[in-house]
Length: 291
Image 1: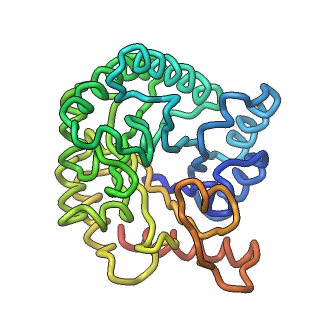
Image 2: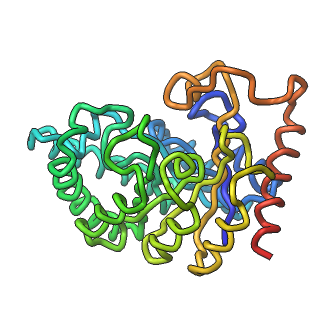
């Protein structure tokens, strides 16, 4: 089992220019993976790419990529010219992610994020998404890459709100590189049983797993069934990555572009040490569930 931490836990913005520093920070906090947003990868200099790869090698850290697509990646578009151009853009992004050695891309990477214009034509949207993802899946095979589709709540997307819908799409695509991302925050809203969702997706298709509390703070004791979740992951012999995705910072792009963080989520005296201590405590809490 690998443990990951999203860069946005430490930053009020989805993206930054200090990834080598946070690669080292992730390792100091006991993590194996640093997860970053995708957009800057398209314009990143070779010097920065080399620095990221050197920091990963020095700290034994893997890079994962995440994010939600806009209309530049309109993989469900009913207009074939737009859909085909969007697939081309996705293939360009895949190459950009591979530059830093990433092998996983997780998020709303199958339809535009927070857009609902085709919500009542889901069957056709499924068909268009599957058509797009078949082409992307073939390209992922060239990079030994897992394209993990995040199951999100109804307020952020309409296509994949439950694990059953995600499995429907993976079955339509039928490619081992197109997989599923389950997330405790979204699943808490939409699933009847978080543990059963894990078991039904199974080891073969569960490409990534996100953890966060009900209000998107780091995992901690509360009403979420953490032990049942971890037992289900053990039951399917899950051996990929469990990433923590706390969204707790106000005043930046995380709050304004999808994270919707409108109130202080951290103690008033939170400094770098406290942030690190909190995420280490969260990691140790979840790790204890697997023992």
